[in-house]
Length: 121
Image 1 (cartoon, helix red, strand yellow):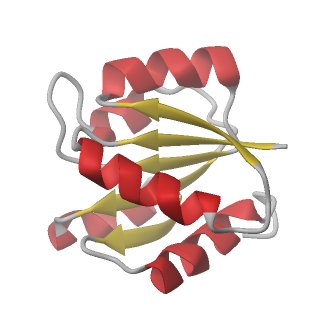
Image 2 (cartoon, one colour):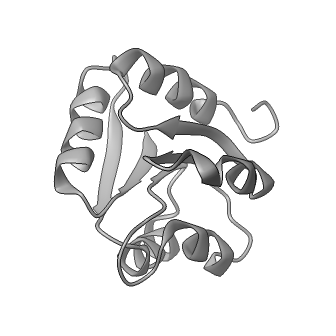
Image 3 (cartoon, rainbow, N blue to C red):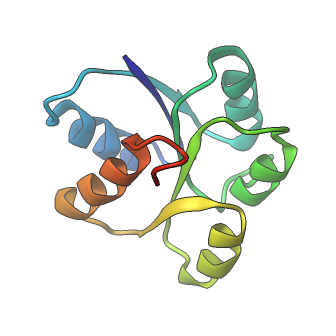
C-alpha cells in the first residue's frame, strides 16, 4: 500500500485532497501535516511514497522542508496558490506542480505521475 503525506496549513485544502484520494480505486495510507515541522517528523518515521506539499505555511515552509530532508525517497508534488515558485519546485525534483484551485482531473494527472517509480517519473 502506497503512503501519501498531505502537507498544507489550510485544513480545507487537505480535506479536498483526502476526498480526491478516497475517490480513486487504489487504497492509500494517508498522513496529514499542517506545516513543515510536522511533515519532517512524519517523513522520518513513515517514509511516504508521495508528498503533496504546500509552499506557504507557518513555522517551516515547503521549500525549507525539501531542503531539510536528506536523501528523499518520495515523489514530490507541490500544490500551492503561488505560480512564481514553479521553476524552483522543478529544480527541487518535483514530479508535478498543482496550482490552486485545481480540480480532481488535474489532481489525478499529478498523482498518476507520482505513483510511478522515481526512475519512471
